[in-house]
Length: 303
Image 1: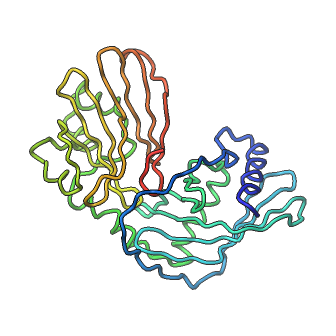
Image 2 (image 1 turned 90 degrees about the vertical axis):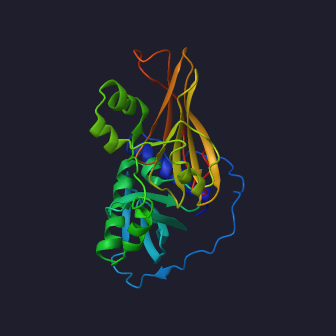
Image 3 (image 1 turned 135 degrees about the horizontal axis):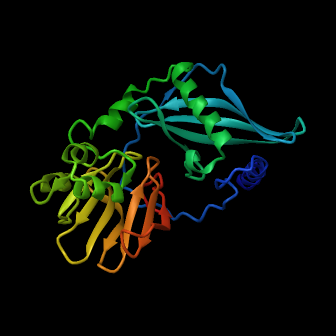
């Protein structure tokens, strides 16, 4: 099945499920080539056990899609699964195509995200809830039935945690400010929003090639092998916060995520799925209005 036909099929499925979330019918904007440095890819280990390797997504009224894993492999970052997808209408096979997904796990063993290799979408954000649950169950079966060893994945996820204090997601600026400055709960602030001051901790930014001079900064969990930082500039009339993603020695992308100029309050939430939600309002007594949403693409660009 072509990519276009797959998007149309899943869109029909989402309508029948009355799902309020966005579906895969949404067109993928053109993604320009990423600027990358030359790296040596980690070898992938093939998983031999291919039994009990399929699941079916039902869309009601006789339509269904069966996903059958034909190839499973892993490296230190993710588990890669190539599926044969058979689409049925009234029990009749109408089209077959291949789809490949990358499964990323948290250091707890829970699934973190599942990326469609072709569209770069995290299906835990984009697919309808029933489809998400089926993929989550398959992610669990990869560990339970396929004996996928996620210890290298845990080691990868923990590499920065072992060295530095990490701010857990979601990171809600309003909650951070309330916890650390309004309530002044020092213990909770230190636990949830560990903060590094500058220039005392300049060496950390230098390690990741960041030449900026913020008032302070936060370190977030890694995503796709990249290290995110939030840089806070709070010693001027106009305060600002920036999200920066870096490799070990070089920043890859950045985005201003908050600004406080005395006339408007523009702040942010970075969700547990690394969605970046930007909000605006006139003052802190008003309800926040969602202004923009961004995602971090697998190559590190913010779109």
